[in-house]
Length: 119
Image 1 (cartoon, rainbow, N blue to C red):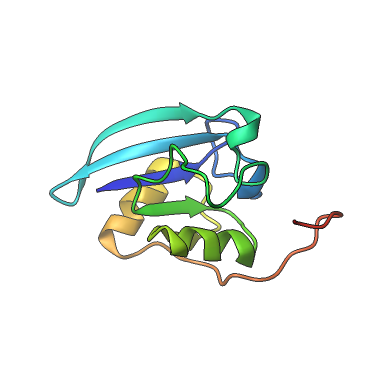
Image 2 (image 1 turned 180 degrees about the horizontal axis):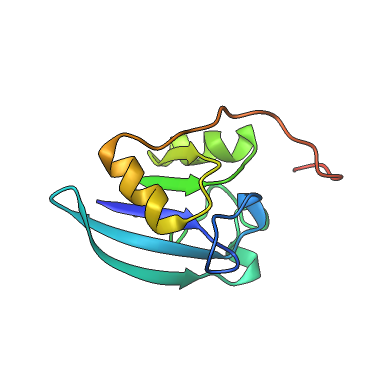
């Protein structure tokens, strides 16, 4: 299993996932973290700037943990069979450990406005 965590600053979980271009990718084996690497996307491959019908380097993850995302991105991930998880936890490692233990405190998805229209 692979879990992606949005982390634009490489230290904390990112709130605006659509514009995020840096993701920690955790390899999970036997319900434990087996590896962690940073995936950096070019701007045109961010969720905000890419087409939902184009392949993405994140297509092979099963879970994406973030601090926030719109319902459109949540639907896009669902169509790719990626579980979207929102949390107020800021530490990526702790969020993954808590997710694996079933103790991660999650937040509901809410529509958001950020000053522009989506295509």
